[in-house]
Amino acid sequence: MAPWLQLLRPGDWTKNVFVLVPAVFWLSGEGRGFDLAEEFEVRFRPLIWAFVAFCLAASGTYCVNDALDAPKDRQHPVKRRRPVASGAVGVGAAMLVGYAMQGFALGLAWNTAGKVVGACVLAYLLLQLAYNVRLKRVPLVDVSVLSTGFCLRAAAGAAAMDVKVSIWLMLCVFFLTLFLGFTKRLCDLSAAENARAAGQQVDWKPRIGYETRDQMNWLLGVSGSLLVIVYLMYTLSSLAERLYGARAMGLALLTPLVMIAIHRFYRRANLGLSDAPLETLRTDRALLAAIAAYVIGTLLVLQWQPVETLLKGLLLR
Image 1 (cartoon, rainbow, N blue to C red):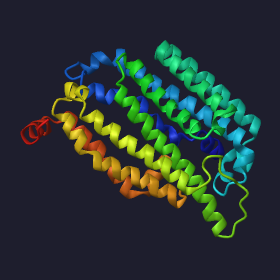
Image 2: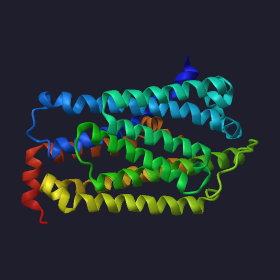
Image 3: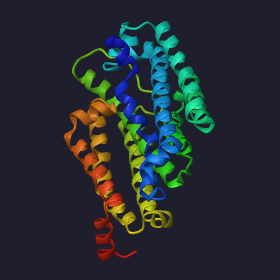
Image 4: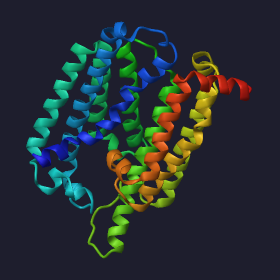
C-alpha cells in the first residue's frame, strides 16, 4: 500500500490550500459581520467539497503523469525512486486509477460544489491533458500551464463561496506558483549535477530551455521579483484599502517574510534538495518559521482590532 500512497502524494494536497484562500480574504473583508453558522451551508460546505475534488483530481493527475514520465524518470537520480519508475506500481494500473480518480473528482465537484466549480475542475483536467501531450515540452509554457492550474483552484474556491475573486489574488497566485515551478526545474538540474559530481552514472537530461543555471536564475529572478511587486501593489491598492482599511498597510509590512520564504525555496532548489512542499516545510526550519510568522501576522492584521488602531495611528497613506 505504501507505493500507492506515495504515488497519490497526499502530502502534496497542501497545494490545494489555494482553493481555501478566497475564504480567508472574504472573512476579513466583505464577510465581516456575517453569521458563519448561517453561511456554512451556502458558502463553506461547497468550498470544502471543492477542496476535496481538487485533491482527488490532483492525485489522479500525479498517477497519469508518473505513468507517462516513467521511462525518463528512471534516468534521474531522485525521480527513479518514484513508484511507477521503480516498478513498484505498474504503468497500466497507475493510468487506470488516475483516470478513475479524475472522473470521480469531476462528478463530485459538479454535483456538490456547483457547475462553475465543476467547470474549473474540468478546465484543470483538460489543461493537464494538454500539458502531458505537448505543453510540458515547451519552455516557459509548461510552468505557466501549471501556474494556471493553481489560479483555477483559487477561482474554484471563490465560485464555491459565490464571491468575486480579486485579479490581484489571481496574479499573486500565478507568480508564486510560477516561481515554485521554476524552483522545481532548478532542483532537477542541481540534483543531476550533484549526482554526476559524486561519480554516479546519470543519463537524465534537463528539458529544453532549462539546461543551465544562468537560464534558471534569470527565470527565478523575474518570477520572484514579479511576485513581490504584485503583492506590494495589491496590499497598497485602492481595492485593499476599501476592503481592509488601514489593515492593508499591515499586509504590506509583511513583505520581508515573503522575501525570506522565496529565498529559502530558491536555496533548496539550488542545492538540489527535494522540492515537495511538505518535505520542504519539514526540513527547512527557517522557511517554516517565515511561513508561520506570515500566517500569524496576516491573521493578526486582518482579525485583531488593536492592530488596525495601531496602524492608523502610526502610518499615512
